[in-house]
Length: 340
Image (cartoon, rainbow, N blue to C red; front, side):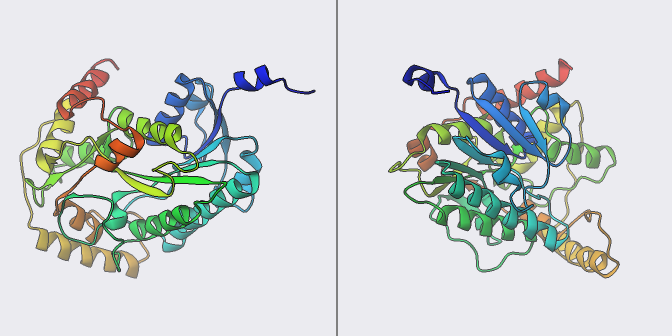
């Protein structure tokens, strides 16, 4: 059956979101549905709550040869959000998911002539171990990484940006410390450690950036709207934050207080934390322990350094602007918990 011009105009945009069952991926999917977009999602697990919203979910492994290709036909864009995150794990799993899975996404875009690829990266791809204070995207990749997550994410980002072409427009977003209602990663760990008396600050007054979940997801749709051949954002990477760095102790205490949890400020020196992380990593490798250690060198490095960024390029090229202040975001988080 032929499609008329009028019918074509009325057709909804169709996108595929990898990692659609995760914290960020699910919010991107929800915002897409609110925009009238047809959303397909991919995840390793089953997410009936996401499906009930109207997302066409498929369960599977993004690194499996041809899997993404089989799902992406007819899509106008792919949001590649899926990744193996964390500070500890099997090197082969990080490489398979973060590098191999990204290769599969790029290949699907190229073979199916999908014009847009929005890749979720991480600021850790440029963290060389010291303080980062107000720097922009001109920061280079470091020559050495102390963990598999930033190393494999950096390589994946490189490959995405190198895939920019006349037929495939790509952009990489680097949201930093995503938090908010529904967080299943950062917040549960903070709450658990606080309740068990295990929470320690390494450098409590160092400034860090973070980003509220709704703003992090909206930045992805800003990129979708702006991304096209010849766009300033095509082939570029961008930091995404709330544009309001806070002392790490105030950020953590704000999140805890929103959940009705108070905790005394207990500290440990960065040097001791790095030494403990090094010892634990060696022990866990020696005895093949799969659980993540309480401390790793990567965690010690992240918690003992300042990392906040200049996001003027994201504002200019993507039209990104945080919709709320940090205080307003914390109040939203608190109200969302009270409404449960």
